[in-house]
Image (cartoon, rainbow, N blue to C red; front, side, top):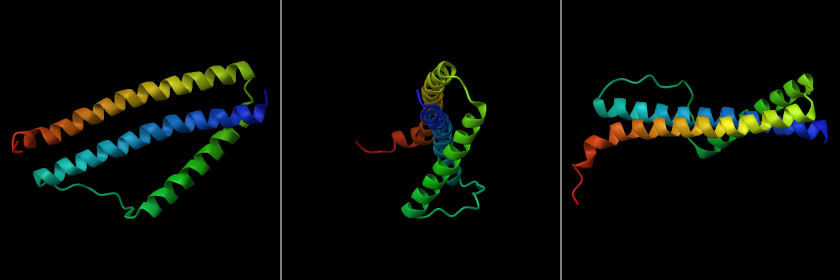
Length: 124
């Protein structure tokens, strides 16, 4: 199998794990911010001002290209055998699934804490 293709797939699988964890962290941070706003407490905002969809997509695409490029270079440098690379890809994808399942579950717990007080206030 072509080593270039294997290294690209390794980079993409690693990026998927990193991206999933970062996205869920962002979701949980937004729940924390919402919870602070509801409670009237101060919340330290990030210094970034991502206020349009275009900025969001541009930042995401740029991060994707940079991270995948760096990871690709790293895996080229490592020069793993095909067998080791394929086992690593499988492990990364399984780890990505498991980590996402756990962190999304934590998100659901976080959002439930925020929404529960309003549940009985909604008229049916």
